[in-house]
Amino acid sequence: MNRLCSATLYIRTMNEGSPLKPEEIDALLNLIDDPDDQIYTQVRDQIVSLGASVIPKLELFWEDQEPGDVFQRRIEDIIHEIQFSSVEQSLKDWHESGAESLLEGALIINRYQYPELDETEIRETIARIRQDIWLELNDNLTSFEQVRVMNEIIFNVHGFKGNKKNYHAPQNSYLSHVLESKRGNPLSLSMLYIILAESLDVPIFGVNLPHHFILAYEDRFNIYRETDTANKERKVLFYMDAFSKGTLLNRAEIVRFLKRQKLEPKPEYFMPCDNSVMMVRCIHNLIFAYQHAGEEAKIEELKKLLAIFSAA
Figure (tube, rainbow, N blue to C red):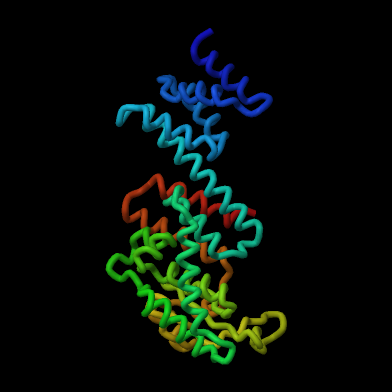
């Protein structure tokens, strides 16, 4: 029996019955550097099917190889494939379950670039900012006063601002990098603002404005405008621009912005959007950034993530 047939039979045998034993996994990993592409493809698929639990063992195997060895490169590719599959499945689950937590959605996208990052630090950083805001809020503040407090803490005390020098950098879309550098794009800064506002029960939501992304403060006591009942609109008191340190905007200013972009002022350009819309825009931002960087492999992967939201 030739090597390809032997390996195929061996892999098929391991696919049947109970979970693989440690020594069986080791034997499978030893086939990674097989020169036959067919054997390697079967081995790779089998290892990927084992999921994230096999990554520590793969990393140990990687450390035992010579730098640049084909074995090392293949292990790196397998680890990346496992991690990407995890991100893809997590994002699909998040979307299909209602996309309720914007923070969780942002963390899933963050894992695409930083799969091994400790997310506890991200949550703790956000919690500290939230605590600083909470200490300054009270039930007697008006909507404008609440926003003034949030703007002061987020943009002046903690120093967040728009990354105008490197606007299209992909790092601007990753929450961990935004929290560390205190720089972001309109969407990422708005998402941070929304995450904080939601945790403080402040009715601030995102508005998916073309060529920009802004925030809306909703009237929590009269959430619908009095239009025809078949086409109700959520009532917005005012808008803010997180990229410009929370500058307040009104509807007329948005109309003027749209006219400068030669766009018609459609209703959806003024209404709060849901979390899935923000994730779609975040992925589009990353695709655009990686196109400028010539990262074709990342672009193809991000398109797979984008397809999750267009699936029936």
